[in-house]
Image (cartoon, rainbow, N blue to C red; front, top):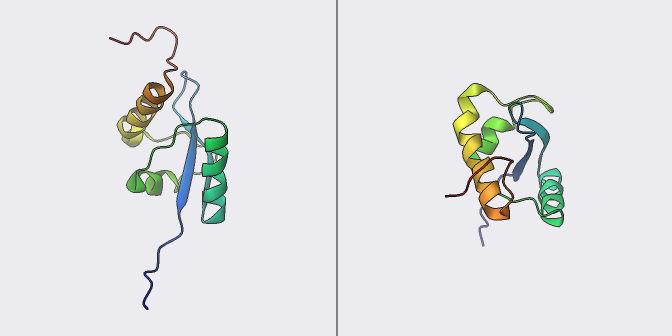
Length: 95
């Protein structure tokens, strides 16, 4: 039987303090990606799958701020995380 070869999974974690642009706090492939995902689950961090965005973010260095070209895509991920966890930044109004 012919099994399909799957490329190793990639994962990127972002840190956002609400003051500066989000930055890359962790990244990895394969087993390291699995560990990043498992740690996120253990700590209640929302997960969002977007293979293209992860591919772009994975090219950045650890602690590097995301480039302006990715602000909208990453803002959507951050908004998703706020909605899923129902934890909103100070001053945010849910209408």
